[in-house]
Image (cartoon, rainbow, N blue to C red; front, side):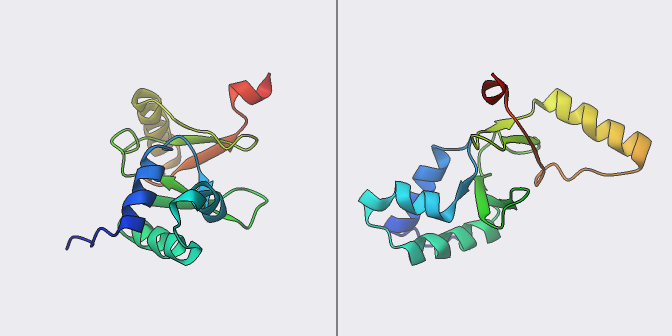
Length: 130
Protein backbone atom coordinates (compact mmCIF):
# COMPACT_ATOMS: atom_id res chain seq x y z
CA UNK A 1 0.00 0.00 0.00
CA UNK A 2 1.45 3.36 -1.01
CA UNK A 3 2.08 5.85 1.76
CA UNK A 4 0.44 9.24 1.44
CA UNK A 5 3.11 11.73 0.34
CA UNK A 6 2.80 14.75 2.61
CA UNK A 7 4.83 17.89 1.98
CA UNK A 8 6.92 17.11 5.08
CA UNK A 9 7.59 13.54 4.00
CA UNK A 10 8.60 14.70 0.51
CA UNK A 11 10.99 17.34 1.90
CA UNK A 12 12.52 14.78 4.28
CA UNK A 13 12.94 12.19 1.52
CA UNK A 14 14.51 14.76 -0.79
CA UNK A 15 16.97 15.79 1.92
CA UNK A 16 17.89 12.20 2.77
CA UNK A 17 18.31 11.20 -0.88
CA UNK A 18 20.77 14.09 -1.29
CA UNK A 19 22.82 12.82 1.68
CA UNK A 20 23.27 9.14 0.91
CA UNK A 21 26.91 9.28 1.99
CA UNK A 22 26.09 10.30 5.57
CA UNK A 23 24.60 8.84 8.71
CA UNK A 24 22.50 11.54 10.34
CA UNK A 25 20.78 11.91 13.69
CA UNK A 26 17.20 13.15 13.91
CA UNK A 27 18.58 16.33 15.47
CA UNK A 28 20.94 16.94 12.57
CA UNK A 29 18.10 16.39 10.11
CA UNK A 30 15.77 18.71 12.04
CA UNK A 31 18.44 21.42 12.14
CA UNK A 32 19.11 21.10 8.41
CA UNK A 33 15.39 21.37 7.65
CA UNK A 34 14.66 24.27 10.01
CA UNK A 35 14.02 26.64 7.09
CA UNK A 36 11.50 24.18 5.66
CA UNK A 37 9.26 24.51 8.75
CA UNK A 38 8.97 20.79 9.45
CA UNK A 39 8.14 20.04 13.05
CA UNK A 40 10.50 17.85 15.02
CA UNK A 41 7.64 15.45 15.77
CA UNK A 42 6.93 15.11 12.03
CA UNK A 43 10.59 14.32 11.43
CA UNK A 44 10.63 11.60 14.11
CA UNK A 45 7.31 10.17 12.91
CA UNK A 46 8.47 10.05 9.29
CA UNK A 47 11.87 8.59 10.20
CA UNK A 48 10.12 5.75 12.06
CA UNK A 49 7.80 5.11 9.11
CA UNK A 50 10.62 5.24 6.55
CA UNK A 51 12.63 2.81 8.65
CA UNK A 52 9.69 0.39 8.79
CA UNK A 53 9.33 0.67 5.00
CA UNK A 54 13.02 -0.19 4.53
CA UNK A 55 14.00 3.22 3.14
CA UNK A 56 16.26 3.96 6.11
CA UNK A 57 18.67 1.95 8.18
CA UNK A 58 19.03 2.80 11.82
CA UNK A 59 22.28 2.46 13.76
CA UNK A 60 24.11 3.64 16.85
CA UNK A 61 27.76 4.57 16.75
CA UNK A 62 30.04 2.82 19.21
CA UNK A 63 30.18 4.75 22.47
CA UNK A 64 27.06 6.78 21.68
CA UNK A 65 23.43 6.34 22.61
CA UNK A 66 22.26 8.61 19.82
CA UNK A 67 20.44 6.96 16.92
CA UNK A 68 21.61 7.66 13.38
CA UNK A 69 19.83 7.08 10.09
CA UNK A 70 21.23 6.23 6.68
CA UNK A 71 19.15 6.52 3.52
CA UNK A 72 19.07 3.02 2.07
CA UNK A 73 16.53 3.35 -0.71
CA UNK A 74 19.25 4.18 -3.20
CA UNK A 75 20.36 1.70 -5.84
CA UNK A 76 23.99 2.18 -4.76
CA UNK A 77 23.14 0.98 -1.24
CA UNK A 78 21.48 -2.30 -2.07
CA UNK A 79 23.77 -5.26 -1.47
CA UNK A 80 26.72 -3.13 -0.39
CA UNK A 81 28.45 -2.85 2.92
CA UNK A 82 28.97 0.63 4.27
CA UNK A 83 32.02 2.17 5.88
CA UNK A 84 31.30 4.99 8.32
CA UNK A 85 33.91 7.40 9.67
CA UNK A 86 33.73 7.92 13.41
CA UNK A 87 35.26 11.40 13.11
CA UNK A 88 33.46 13.12 10.24
CA UNK A 89 30.41 10.85 9.85
CA UNK A 90 30.94 10.29 6.12
CA UNK A 91 29.59 6.96 4.88
CA UNK A 92 31.12 5.19 1.91
CA UNK A 93 29.92 2.22 -0.10
CA UNK A 94 32.28 -0.74 -0.21
CA UNK A 95 32.55 -1.88 -3.80
CA UNK A 96 30.54 -4.96 -4.73
CA UNK A 97 33.63 -7.06 -5.49
CA UNK A 98 35.07 -6.37 -2.02
CA UNK A 99 31.69 -7.03 -0.42
CA UNK A 100 31.46 -10.34 -2.27
CA UNK A 101 34.98 -11.30 -1.20
CA UNK A 102 34.29 -10.56 2.45
CA UNK A 103 30.91 -12.33 2.40
CA UNK A 104 32.45 -15.37 0.72
CA UNK A 105 35.33 -15.47 3.23
CA UNK A 106 32.92 -15.29 6.17
CA UNK A 107 30.72 -18.02 4.74
CA UNK A 108 33.59 -20.37 3.89
CA UNK A 109 35.77 -19.85 6.95
CA UNK A 110 33.32 -18.93 9.69
CA UNK A 111 30.05 -20.50 8.51
CA UNK A 112 28.58 -17.00 8.82
CA UNK A 113 26.09 -15.46 6.40
CA UNK A 114 26.50 -11.70 6.19
CA UNK A 115 23.41 -9.49 6.07
CA UNK A 116 24.46 -7.07 3.33
CA UNK A 117 21.44 -4.84 3.82
CA UNK A 118 22.21 -3.76 7.34
CA UNK A 119 25.97 -3.76 7.82
CA UNK A 120 28.02 -0.70 8.70
CA UNK A 121 31.71 -0.97 9.52
CA UNK A 122 33.08 1.85 11.66
CA UNK A 123 36.56 3.31 11.49
CA UNK A 124 38.48 6.41 10.41
CA UNK A 125 38.35 7.52 6.74
CA UNK A 126 41.45 8.38 4.72
CA UNK A 127 40.71 12.13 4.84
CA UNK A 128 40.51 12.13 8.66
CA UNK A 129 43.72 10.12 8.96
CA UNK A 130 45.71 12.93 7.28
